[in-house]
Length: 213
Image 1 (cartoon, rainbow, N blue to C red):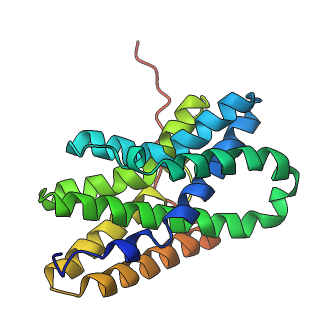
Image 2 (image 1 turned 90 degrees about the vertical axis):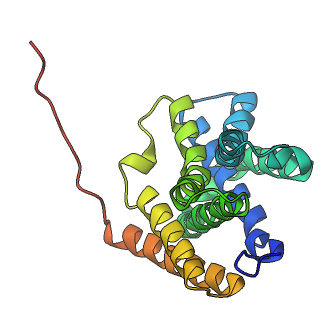
């Protein structure tokens, strides 16, 4: 394997936790819309695995990742359904959940970016692949729940994905060892996301109310 690409074990060590956390966020969103159990399972699945699915379709990477790992399907659906049971206690785990969600964002972004690099796509495509993997599951969740995607209106989220992918590719260009690169990019991205949450950092917003006559 190319020494500038992370080993499989390094990239996927956090993946099961990440998709479980994302599945739980999808289940909570479905619960806020009073969906039935089937709806909860669907939203949990789309939230956790939708970003990677879209990435693979765009890059022409077949077979799609989760189809080769049915255990991930069982995991995300189980996590979604479990959420319906423990939801009343979730407020006590809010901080833990935010950390897990942040870890999921960074892990997905790095995985998506690495997949595109391995397929020898240009830098800009690799960055977009990382961002698609990181944020598109949440976008699909919010669209299906009929609300403006959270990633476009809360603390820095998509911007963190962009920064992580940019850092990963920059360090790779300088010949930094792949596993060290992954560790540094992951830690920096996680810190940035958590500081953004704590400080309420946001990008400038655009508001346009005037109507066309």
